[in-house]
Length: 114
Length: 112
Image 1 (cartoon, rainbow over the protein chains, first blue to last red):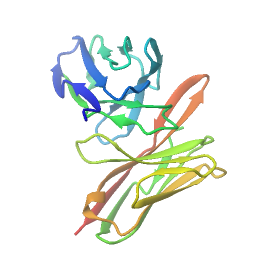
Image 2 (cartoon, each protein chain N blue to C red; image 1 turned 180 degrees about the vertical axis):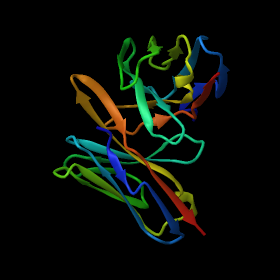
Image 3 (tube, chains in turn purple, orange; image 1 turned 90 degrees about the vertical axis):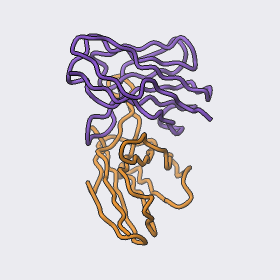
Image 4 (cartoon, helix red, strand yellow; image 1 turned 90 degrees about the horizontal axis):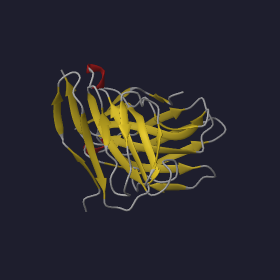
């Protein structure tokens, strides 16, 4: 059972570079989420999607973009990386809204921007 | 607007009980509980729905007081494996923008 798979697991970027964090799930879940977790802190919602072709902003969307062309994939794009984006990024999925069904998390991508 | 959890941290001996509280300033329709071990992803424990329905873990229980906008997680006869950070989570909407918000977290350590 793969569940939610995130790649890469670790990445170091230079300020101003761009990259895409990949997330794929094999549970046929409609709902997918991107969170960031700063050291010692809780998780904050960046973007979410309720199905292919539908995405919307969460609590902290600035500096990020997403797309959802298929049910399985929900990539997160960082443009012009900044040190404030150093964090652990988690992708999650659920079969119903985040309030009604459990969210299943990937193992995370640890991103450092220097 | 982030749900506030208490206590912030707790240390237990194996076999002791603990209660973790989650309090929101906004109306709650459901509350989730997750546990996150250091360096790992959060893992779902339990959902509590408005109206009393509860889905989740066999050895951990929880309550949900809709009127007080609070939830409590009860860990009984704690085991070493219970160590980690516990988060409550809830969904809501502000100015039409959907939010799923995690609480401030409670660090729990169980000692042998």
